[in-house]
Image (cartoon, rainbow, N blue to C red; front, top):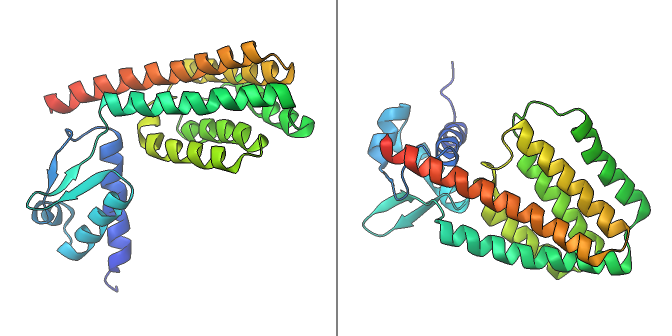
Length: 224
């Protein structure tokens, strides 16, 4: 049997470490050493080094002089700051759409997507953070404002891994569906106040859910 190639080994280590970081199995600022990881995964330092660099590129790990690689978990202030900016962008989005209108066919398709999920609530196994991001980014795209879309995607990228802790139960998914449908209906009706309130409620629900998850994960990580 041929020895496994380094890129494949790097990808395996990267995936394993990413999963642990997302699940908060490491305390913030936990320090990785190539020697320890090499021993744990039974591979040479080369794929370990490549995996750590991939984690740096994904914003999950930082590399500092004399300290090496440390886990980068966002603190609550950073999370709230990002949610504040996201809310400002998304309130502008629904206000603009309520005034200028939205594509009928696209609106019906997006509404059907979330109505179908609501009517047949599945067991949540993952993937709904991405679906939620896609919903909000689609609204931004309908404005035709490329800068708005770009900035919202930037915020989503920075919040992505932390938002994986958000929609993890059927009850949370049901609430998200109901809130998305209300946003769409308010926008379609051209009701600016209703649309803004629905969007604000949706974002605040996500913020509170993430905050609870982060606090619980931090408590668990320090008990390990």
